[in-house]
Structure formats: C-alpha cells, structure tokens
Image 1: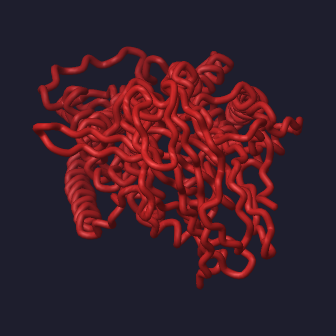
Image 2: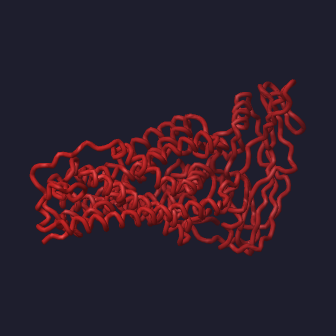
Image 3: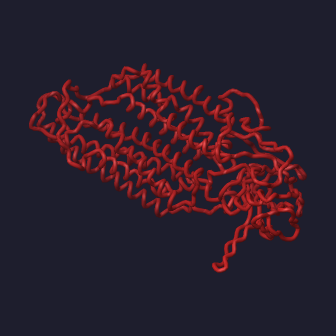
Length: 612
C-alpha cells in the first residue's frame, strides 16, 4: 500500500506514462491521500538521498554509497515538486510490517574494498546524512560517526553506523511519525586503507566485511493523522533556527508604520501648500506657463513626455505585475493550508504552475501600457516580455544544472522533467503571454494625461548630488529592505536551510508592508525629483524602489558568509545563481509597484491644478 503519485517517468524503472501536459501540471501539484494499514501490512521504506549536512542543496542518490541495495533497483514514481526538490526515492531492503516489532534483523552483509571504505570515510568526514521516506514521512540520520580529540597526540576516529533502530508511531490504522536512532549502538571503525575493525567485522586482503542490521519498534500515539505534521515540526534532527522573535517583528512593524505616517503627513502638507500657491497664482489654463514659477508646476508640459526604451519599460511592468500576482497567490494558498511538511515539493510545483498560468498577466499589462504610450512594435514587446525573466532563468538553471550533473547530484533534473518544464513554457506560458498581449492591445485606452506635452523638451537644470539616481536608489532600496530584514532571515533559513516555514500570516503582513513602503517611498522621491524641475521620472521610479533587489543580494552574500556553513562549488553556484534571480524578481515586482504609485501620484497632483 502507498500514496498514489502522478508519474513523471524520470528514472530507469520509473513509471513511464504519457499524459496531457495540463493534467500533469494539475495532478502533480497536490497528490496523495490518507493511507490505512492493517496489522501485518507491508509499509514500504524508500531510501532517498544523502549529502553534506551543511550543504542542503548538494544531494546524491543514496545508492551512490557502498550500502545494502537490492539486485534490481525500483524507483518510486515522483511528483514534479519532488523531482525539483532533488528527491530520488527507491525501494529498500528494509522489511517493515505495520505494528510488528523486529529485533536486530540482518539487512545484508557487505564486503567493502579499500576504495569503498575510503568513499565511506570521505562521506562521514563531510558529515553526510541520509534521508529515508516512510509513508511520506522523512527520516534523517547520519551515515557515520566522527570524533576529534586531543591535541598532542591528536586522535581522529571515523566510524560507520551498521545498525539502525526505527521508532515508528501509529494511531489506529495510520502512521503518525517515524525516526531512526543509534543511541545504544557502537559504530564500526573505518581505518585508512581498510584497517582493522572490531567484533563482528572481518578483515582480509585489503577488504572489510560488515553486517548491516536493523530493529523496528512501534509506539501508539494520541495524535490523529490530520495532525501528524505537528509531530514532524517538533522533531529536531536539524537545528531549530526559526524561533519567533516577536519583539523584533513588532519593532519592525512599528518603525514602518511611523515611516509611512511621516511620509504621508509631510508630503500632504507640502502638497497642500503647493496647491494653494499655484491655484491662487493661476489665472489661465494649464498650458499658460508662468515664467516666474518654479517647482513641479513649471514642467507640466514635459512631465508626461514618454520615456526612452518604452518596450523594455513595459516589459518590466508586465513581468513585475506577474510576480506580484504569483507571490500573492502562493502566500494565500499557504494560508489555506495547501502546503505542509508531508507534501514534498508542493510549493515548487505550485510556483511552476502559477508562473505558467500568470503569464497572461504580464502580456496584458505590458502590451496594454505599451499601446497607451504609442508603442508600435507590439509583437516585439510580447517577445521581450515573455523572455525578460525566462531567459535569465534558463541561463542560470543551465549553469547550475550542469554543475549538479557533473558532480552526480540528484539536484540535476532528468531529461523528462526538463522536457516537461520546457513544454509548460512553450505550450502554456508563452501562448498565454501572447493571448494576454493581444487582449491588452485591443482593450488599451488612451494614456489620460491631464496636461498636453510640447514638441520641444524643456532643458533640465543641474541637479544637486542628493537628487542623483544613485542616491535615490540607495534611499529607495534601503527603506523597503529594512522593513523585511527580520523576516528575510527566516525565509533564507527555510529556502537554504532545512526548516519548514509556517508563519504565513506574518509573511502576508510583511509582504503588504513591503509593497506599502515601496509605493510611499517612490511617491516621495518622485515629488522631490519633480520639485527640482526634472521630469525624467519614468525609469527613476522603477529603479528607486527596484534597487531593493540589490540590497537583498548583498544580504544573501552576508548570509552565506556569516549565517550558514555552506561551502563547495555545487552549493555555492546554486546559492548565488538563484540569489541573483531572487534579487531580479524583487527588482521587477517592486519596480512595477513603485512606477504605478508614482504615475497615480503625478496624475493626481496635475489634475488638482485649476484648469480654467
């Protein structure tokens, strides 16, 4: 008996079934239901992967180590999210029956060559851990034992765990929790060159013979199957770093609220004075320029002058709107309980499906606004929109996946999964971008500028240093980053660690605050820019708050060096490659939000002038 999974057909011996792409994308999102067992029923234990403890994304198939394995390896059919998460589950030699205890049963006897002993020694010295899966419950343990003691003389001991105790909790006919322990077990020493071993282990001719055994003990639990995720969250094989620092979070929220209030109140008072002065002096229409004026009113005939690189700007706005929709949908789905610790890779699957389905948003927003600002090459605009993020994503993935493939890591995607993802973009993502673009082009109205734009552009006066683009980017990026800095650590510990993030309510609040701060800061910086008679606000509004992505990437470097123990080419390439993509996502998303906030603000202040 087992949980039904939709097959991807990613490995030899896997389930090779052909099905419609849409069915695959939907069924692979959430697969699985409650499995009931009778006493004596077989409970399949799958071996999954091994890897260095401090490098979460550097994982290898369990059977790459010289361990007990069946003559013919049968792999479990996996969901899309599991494959993306590096899972490669295969049936094991462990025979576990529901509610039947087993005491020190022999798994197999292995004769290890000198090379295989060295492989195990190297794995143990790199703190390799293993992951098994029993009824969708992950089970973790270390491959061996290492001890460093003394200075003079220095002692370096490496041992292999050859006996595992499985402790399984059940309630009724359901498995609730499982773990493995080596509490009362002595490790088998592994000396260099297959040196001498201890009792029960034979040595001869440069080889080492070990006998692997296991025990199974069942314990009744009071938790129901629906609440078994709570038991896994309380288990602490990996260090618990997601302690809720409520004081820090509340402090961050208070500072953000005060900042927003300060910006809004000051800006409204300044605008009120501007409106009073301009509307009293204004006797004619908006097109009559008073040469004695200065400030944002004097550039009313240039402020709506369309910017350079219109197609690229619209593509940024479209993809930014897509990621805003995608992030909101994932957070809401998490709040509804669609992701839990027993649905392996469910968020990965959701992100893939939603990215494909929300492509219509990017096409619609980009092509609609491109048409409003008199863009003519709308076909090129759609192509640019569809490739603005997907092209860097494919390039980064190609480099990372090649390194994983070269190292033999399970994080390297199989060919069938690559074809599936490519098909999702070619058959779903790109067509929806085109459809959204066509609909947006046909439904686009006029730009609705309150003032007419003159043919000859006004000369922009020399600006002081504090109004330069770099300064605005520093201010506009740092303030939104400071609003999410506390929560950002928890997110990094989840994505690049081994934690299960559960604070989705707080995440939604922080996400809303991030967008609010970005919009308010963008409006304030745009006002200061216009007050200096500089009408080049289009790209400036995108870059000012979009620079938050740069701060996030700098933080990722800090996290890598000071908050993690990650190392090695494989882990480092994946970390920095996908950190760059994450920074790009925040740049596009916040740049889009800040642009629309600035555009709404500019339209508001110029409409508020008397236009008799």
